[in-house]
Length: 329
Image (tube, helix red, strand yellow):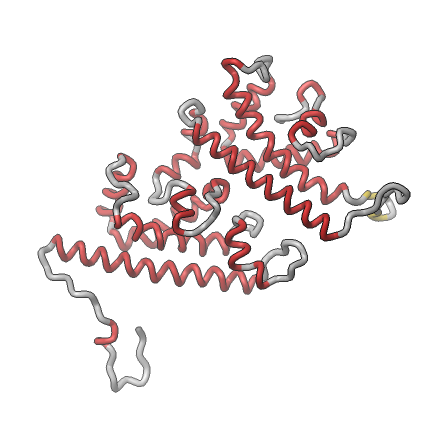
């Protein structure tokens, strides 16, 4: 665990999160920290966490100098873990658990229980900081990947480098996710699935493999018009899967606010109703299919030019039988 070195766990938490009382018992929050470190391992990989743990446990921790990078690695991991753990712990610490049920114990002469809206606002602020510090951690890892091989060679990084969309910024340029690296890493498997299901059949294996190789070599850049035609449907296919499969707490605020929050009560941040999530997913899917058609047209045009054939766009209206009672476009 990246806390409680020399039994100073509560002092470490207090240094990271100034709003905590120094008198709080570290033992009470220890389990939440362990659980959040396990969640962090899923995001950044066990080798990165092991590297930080080895340095934290060593005599070289906080000696600066040549170990400054590793000190920073520990601190960058500690901060989001502390915020997430505090957010989870607070929901239980607001009440006491006794043999005769849950109660609120306060000194009525000097303090009062916070209003529900105050607690909701505090919870949201803590969670937002947890998300932001997680993005800050991933940004730090990206910036220092040359010196932290455990991150450079992580499964998440290997997967990202193999995809048509390989950075949070590329994704955010098409659909706003506030450049959330945390969300981008979570959605990487959906991008890969969407490439296999929808892009490969349209591009064809030869073109698909050649373009992937060109991207990895740097010969195929963001300046290519074809890359944008590929990325736009890919983004919307991935989002349609994310809305369906991910917890709403994983989705970035942009999706929540733009597509869901105006349809639920304003009382805190409640999970989106199933029917609303389905509607949002269908909306993303419809956009993806429309954008994929634009890509298909461009591929047909390129193939026709390569075969020295005049390209004639398909006019769906021309194929409608005016005598038919039912037709489909």
